[in-house]
Length: 214
Image (cartoon, rainbow, N blue to C red):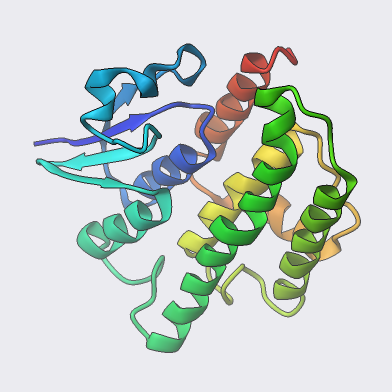
């Protein structure tokens, strides 16, 4: 049975899963869920994920949500080695910390700042912008003495963080130039991550189009 991914191309978390699958050499059967048409709220989708959100992975009847849980599941089950998610407890702990930082701080602060404006018609709040800038300052510090987000080799932490940064840069035109280590790392990630141009670039373009920016 194929690995099925319910996804939307504009979804940052979906992009991370697709990049992870590409790195592992996995084929995904992609099932499009149109966020702009509200398809996550349809009864048939709510049966799949009552949280009405993509991504959802279906591995022969085993369904899993939350992108970072999905990426770790994929590398643990299908990875030929532990390069993307080291088995060493301390190295894995750093990868996990970066993943939790992404979902709980970096991407969350991006969403807190932008989504009320994008989807609810609110105005921007300067305090939320400062919190987002602070998060990028933290990421810059993480990368100060490290080639990649969690050490000297690329991991699923880089995949998750890179898609978050891409959405900020390409969709909202967030300026990462004040963060030199982030800037250097992001440029390296774009040229290193297999499938970046075919997955992330069209995804952020779809996001911009959905918002009426292009």
